[in-house]
Image (cartoon, rainbow, N blue to C red; front, side):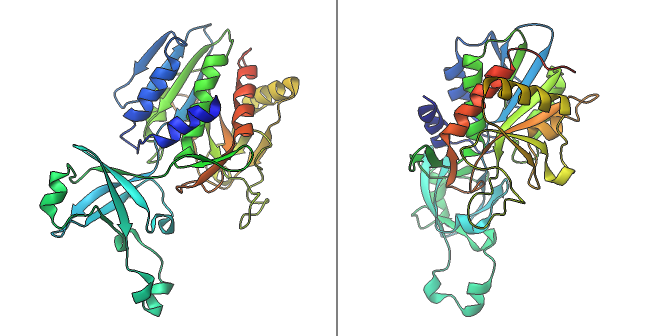
Length: 345
């Protein structure tokens, strides 16, 4: 069941550079469904289904945005830096998990209480420098005794849960949704093609895993399964974000206002034809937001035709991201259908 898989992936912890927990889940889920697993030097996990000489790379990044210990003061309060792109107010007064050498440690993100804020304080932008982590101790030595040191990775403590209907919420749905889609596609697909399911690392800090894996594999075409912003809630214009929740996966034709990736038109046609034939709903987007693994894969070697294939997700890069399970299932169905034959290049 997709819900159970997504819960397992969302509740697991894997900030950029520390993706092993996610990698272990992927291996267990796909054992017996692939011909081989490979793991490269950077840490990408590649699940290979062998077929014809024509190869499709489907990339999905495992990492989530998080934090990292930068300094511990003499009273045991922990300063940190962000790993990946945070909107700082979403961190204020959250619980976190510090993944130390002696096991996980719960902490809270503290800051000055509103009762003693000056009018000037209230107007200021919240900065990471204003925040700190309190793990309940009174000295730096006690922090060390807990197994916490400079460089310890930190993630948000947030449990995956159901909302009404088919909607679910949790942390790291960017991009555990894409990971879940790729896992299920590999399990269900019946394809004559060679498929590289590449579970990439360090996407949130510069698309790094996708670049090295694409160079090594040199596939004929590539798809990046990720998330995109829907424009169907207050504060977002449909002009700026045209996708809607519940209406299927999104074929991103252009990302970052065209400064990122212009999707290969032949792959767009291939995916649209598959959706139309099987009557699977999908959406089109020309976006102003960020890039996906497809943006860097497209530029590897002498160019690899690429396209982002995204699930609408509300409130991304926060601890309370929301997706519709119908969109997740439509995404799986469409890719399974498309992989029945190769695109025309």
